[in-house]
Image 1 (spheres, rainbow, N blue to C red):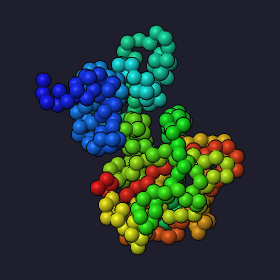
Image 2: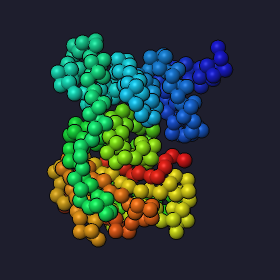
Image 3: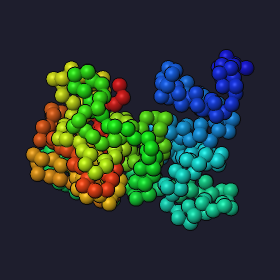
Image 4: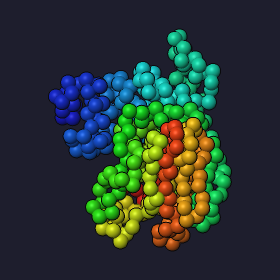
Length: 332
């Protein structure tokens, strides 16, 4: 037995689920050092013991850096294994990503055939995911575009369901300290996906977004899903970081400027709730699955103050948004 194996046995008793739980703590830095490499080793050990959640998390770790069909296939292979091991979220991902409704129906039946998870995996159309729709230009300068039908309704529902019961009061970036804090100017709620919360559905949406905008996936911050009850709003604000403010200057030095934003409207059924650019006389509210993209800086990288915008409150109904900030570089 190696030293690492002995440590695993002493800490987790060799239990696969306990090893996976420890790996997740290392991914998040939850009471232990944040150590993605250690997390990967732990997940590999748990996967060998047949833990489906470990296989699904390995799929995420592979998918985060996917830049070719071969790497995506490797990630999907782990997702298939997780499904075959009985991990329900992996089965749900394969079903929602599949382009084969017959196979999806079979997977939901009591007597699903043994090869169903392989068939679902093989029915995922990666080329379609990486071929986003053409944009509709709302403004050339600053760049503001919409993308009708950017993601399917089933993907919208999946993302909303992932965060139900997990949202908390949204915060703002404190310009002086660089820390997040609540502010009366922002009254909605949010959930931020860290690496341990991600899945291949989320990673494919991010890959599609990167393809549409021309940015590298590595430039994307952690994704947020936002929720607004009637009357909740985000007052007019900028998404770029002000280098004149000490907290923001430190953040720019570490991770680069926040240069663009991408919003996907995840539901219909609410009144008002547009994204408003008051100086530009532009308001946008894409239909469910539609997206809004805008750049926050000029061509020379300087902040564009005409991009001041607000998340208007819904007058009735709930508003759900996928929110993605984009940097010049990220992470450090």
